[in-house]
Image (cartoon, rainbow, N blue to C red):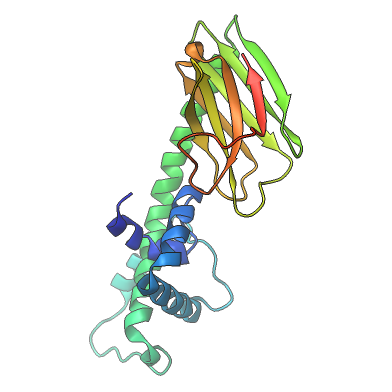
Length: 232
């Protein structure tokens, strides 16, 4: 994700329309960008003025309903009451645009996620139905379990992490496969996340699966000691 992309997420961030990975990336950017910090505070205030106490994530039909209502309003001779919006008209317009954009974006994102999750569920079902499926599990330090299901016929594995608590100090869990004694990243969780299900293709060459505790964003090599290790 490039820096301009991160800047462009501010409207969706304010409206809580980002997924966990995008929100984590923007949180990191926000700590280092005073311009976005200022704009975020102003947009939140403007969005609050627009929504009052009834704000929620925009439903998928919001954009169409609002645009239809706009075309039905007589424009000639229309004199709006600007007493309240006069305070920050530019920001109110920006917040309104963000609401409309989020309404359409939420629908598109939800539709895409449904397709992705269905494909993922089909892949998991096929893997777990393999006749040579091997399942192993080990405890996670601090509580919880990591389970690995492997099929050599499908040359794929499913790593399922279910920890009792997230790592302290904002750190995260990171998954690894060990191939010829070389650790290969297999997925990084976000701060506060305790569970995940990760499909790993080409796992036939892996001898072990490990779980480490890393700084946000993960590491190039695992921090020792591992929080869990499963020998395949």
